[in-house]
Amino acid sequence: MARVLFDGWDLVYRPNSPAAIHLLELLTSQPQGVQATIGLPGGCFHQLPAAMGTDDPIVLSVVETPNSPSGKLRWEQRTIPNLAHTLRADLVHTFEAAALFGKCAAVLSPASVDKSTIPLGKRTEAPTLAERLRDALGQGGRSRLAGLFWPTDLDRLESGQPNSTPRLSLPIPIHPAFRPEAESSAQGSRSRLDLPATFVLYHGSMDQRCMSDLLAVWSWAAGAIGHDDPLLVAGMNPAEQARLDRMAAEYGLRSTVMAMPPLSMAELAQVYRASKVVLESGGAAPWGNSLRLALASARPVVGLENPMSNLILGPAGYLVPLEKKPGERFRAIGAALISVIVDEGLAESFAEKARQRSLDFDMQGFSSALSDAYERLAAA
Image (cartoon, rainbow, N blue to C red; front, side, top):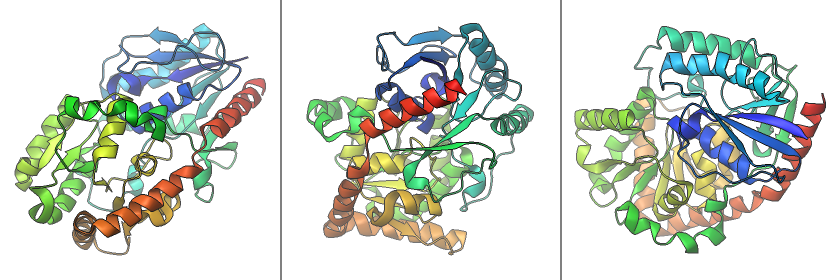
């Protein structure tokens, strides 16, 4: 049996992030032969399954850690390695960074956006010393990984990891809340969430650079559609909500932009299903991204063309060519958004393509492949 320690930072501080969503997919996939412990820096936001693929319950190990750059640095480089040693874990499963000096073997499911690949606006905030140190140590830790879990729909895409890191391709999972059979049981969520009648959904990177790009795109579309179809931004913490409110006021968009607090997976799935279109302007993470959630929800996607979005969406996305200059891209994405909103036939065409695309998602295949991968890495 493989003893796996999962990094649960995002379950506490970013419960709707790609890392949190993918960790929940892992926990609900029920792989066989896994004894799971989740390291948490505080109280978990989500309700977790009782066990994975065995009768052994999932163990929660809480080490109170503040949500700050220095706190996260300490969490990744000291707390998680210490927990792995104490628990005698065979593997640490992480989603963004690995400990440089950790003695336990680590496997990475990359579930963060590579900001260097986002080609729209310019960086608007300088990283702190702790953030720069965390990035450097994290990159060093990633060079020592025992394995990299990579989604099969991105097999043709480079992972950015050294060639010496074993890459294990896994089928695409989907959280049970996003399966079609879950829709009927979640019908009451909409009224509890107080959602607009119709809206555009953004559920992506929340850093200042991406928020600036998002509002630049929305400024081109809001005049035509914003009154009837506001922009709803999902999964923000209180600090991010306050920053978005300030930025929206600077753009003169405050009346058409709404921020949502962290949501349960059932609530998040209902938000996706209720949206008219999903807007993606901030880049996507390899695992747990909004593109696949939109496909599972049969929602049209409008965004910027790049190798990752092309492979994930195929013909199910309305993607603007990358070659345009930043100002032209903002305008072109805004125009594409308006087209999908006003042309119901176009929207339904993309929705049907998304529905067909999501048929490739395979939770059972993912569970089986995950179980084999854990067993192989733990044995090594």
